[in-house]
Image (cartoon, rainbow, N blue to C red):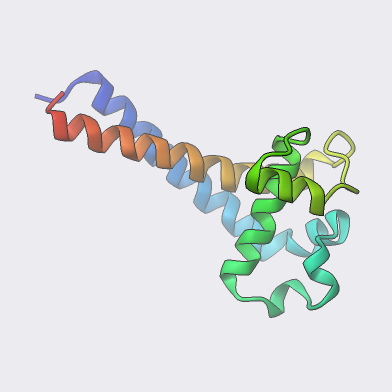
Length: 126
């Protein structure tokens, strides 16, 4: 009854969930001080990272993700992140600081796409 495409979409979704969980734990509990001291988001001039609510902390890390993954883009939210973090050189940022950010947000976005594809396939009965 279930096709290989549904199995692949579900497996990708589960893999993204596991990756997001592991990267999120490392990002928010172990590496946040190192990442924020290296990348220096402008919001951190007003308060420390821990004083912001979780939604703002996630938005700060999303800005880091956009700057590290799409440094030349000037469109919409990505362009705003590149304007705010123009002082960050993605090529000089150490991999030890990049992987939790890219793992967390990359798996969130890819998992969202996999989830929508899974819903569509289940709805169509593929």
